[in-house]
Length: 165
Length: 295
Image (cartoon, rainbow over all chains, first blue to last red; front, side, top):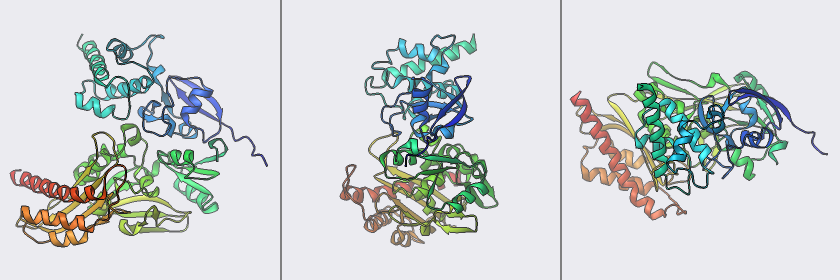
């Protein structure tokens, strides 16, 4: 016997707006974001929690959307890399990644942006060690990380500059 | 089983979750942070038609002290543990252990109860719980029971947990002067890694300050399950600490281990580095005690 379609409706905040989506409850949040909601910043690279390319903020904290079920995100606040854009323009973290050459193939970048935003929101002036710890869950196979660390430092300086001005 | 065919029941109270498990024991599998469960569902090592999601069950997410006892709700995440002022002052070694587990993204979701329930042989929160003589609180609709951590783990991937039961709390005595403890983990790199050897030690200093009047040593990743190195403990207990005897104690601990060779390290290497880990851990406790004398 064919099982009846198991789709249910889930609602959550996504990048500042309210969304409601019908999906099987055991589908991953990543799958629903990409395939149903067409928010393609988060990527599926490993699908098992090793690479960080699917990192999103869930209730303010970075989590791996490939390891969250959509039913677990019901009622939550989700932010992807797209959610940090300002008036459809890149914000200071995204600009810093471009300016410092921290983007090569680009696959890891949206996850790194989310992890960086989370770091800077709780620690506006991180040391290199703190940056490395905060980004340890985001693998990049192109850059060797040096340019990524410089980008995070530049974004932090911009934030601090804005505060002192 | 395809993920799209799995039903998920989301529970928002412990009573409700226990009722569901009582009605469908074994058929419905509880999941918490799901950082291991989703991988197991994808690779087929976990097969089920129904999941009971307890990740939003707030009443099992707490860390508090009742007198000398520290109580950690089973759904406390590693981040909750790492950020807990209660644990920082009462059990630094559990905090240190949790810091080494996974990335920040994993720490924000994975729970201590989930780590126990998953019976992972690589659970790095487990050696500290052995060294702490922690108790695991287990509840079903019908009963509540308290199981010492050593009795909870029955063997490789085998735990004392019935299909209608949930792990609800982990508790242990706060580690305070004259007691102390530390956790060390050896891996192949910094950043998130799986332990080659991990070691947790908790000790009570004798008043003279030159020996331990009591000590517990737990080793991880060098046997099918975490274990207490009891011969090593026996040797360390009430014996004046000298460099030579600490090395001997380490060798005894290595002799009690039964490591395997795998892609990360050979059994011989694991046995060789175990004494160094114990040596370092005991010296950390000695250093820590010197700090007490100054303050």
